Image (tube, rainbow, N blue to C red; front, side, top):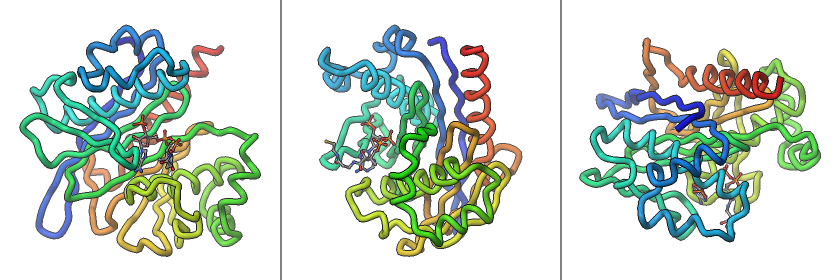
Length: 262
Ligand SMILES: CC(C)(COP(=O)(O)OP(=O)(O)OC[C@H]1O[C@@H](n2cnc3c(N)ncnc32)[C@H](O)[C@@H]1OP(=O)(O)O)[C@@H](O)C(=O)NCCC(=O)NCCS
């Protein structure tokens, strides 16, 4: 398939044990995804791709499934992508079924032509979000934050107000996916308690869900967040203690878009 595809396995250390998760980021136009449909979707998933779907939904469904399969295949090498299914559960959450592996799940998000997924063991609940700046949503974003959150973000993040709000939103949506409730709960429940700077982003803790920690990265106009139990210590390639490559990948996509439009 032509398009941008990156993936990596990350080690998750907790107490005395080590688990593994895999991150995938995909950016591809709809025709390239449509062409690869038979490589991406298994028979059950094909029924989700009906002719009634708007192009934007076909794009998000295919890009999201592609990223999900890429990530799951990294953790289950040798299993063909078409033999893996990622179907909506009763809460619309993605439910992965990987032949021979009973304990793998996936969390995914899409924004425009891009999609991101993290495959993870069920033992380590995770949630992600990926957003593209949309200045027309500024007032909605302000409404869903407290003055304290906005002040925290202003202290820590060297970005304009819209990107800061977007990053706060990403962290909360990623938490809502880790919890499997989605954004059906009052935003105040998902409140951010603290933010600490990371290169290209932040590390966050939550007011009401102290079990979790989030990391979020910003490569304007894109922002992405990943939430996991706070006791987990990350180890990406080269020993990095955060999924820093995500920031690099986001920047690559932004550069690619500039190149295409310029
Ligand atoms: C889940 C939710 C936060 C996603 O927000 P979004 O900005 O529209 O979309 P994103 O690209 O960030 O994420 C979409 C993905 O989240 C995942 N998702 C959906 N519901 C989820 C849940 N309850 N828990 C975890 N993940 C969920 C899905 O994988 C979905 O992608 P897919 O439909 O292609 O499989 C939002 O749709 C929501 O709050 N839904 C709950 C309300 C609901 O159930 N609506 C039903 C629609 S009629």
